[in-house]
Image (cartoon, rainbow, N blue to C red; front, side):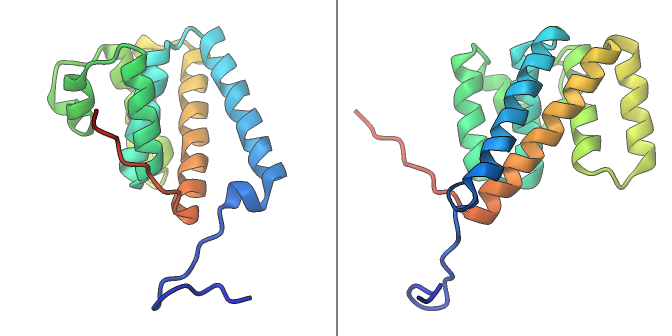
Length: 162
């Protein structure tokens, strides 16, 4: 059986369907991280902001769609979601959210030691050790989901107008 469809477009394997045990382990990790975040009192809004910012950096359309919907269901404003990519240039985010977003960015691109140091310094001023750990684990987990969705080319469904 060929992996080719029409032209030169290669059919992608949906990694979650091809290797369900591995994907299920990732889902279980995500559930454990969500519990850790709740225990650390890292609020759900901050968790979704981390999920969205990491997904923006990675360019994961599927995860951006999913977590935008989750953030909106959780009461997040369209204004804050609209400017999230430029969070440093606004006053719309709390010090705790800003610290968590900086940690998320440092986790997503860990090659810059000074960025990590700066993110940790900011986080230490406003987050507990448990919240710092939770924020980093959220970023690690969404990075993994981003890679699964990007490499699988998970499709988006268009919104239907009423």
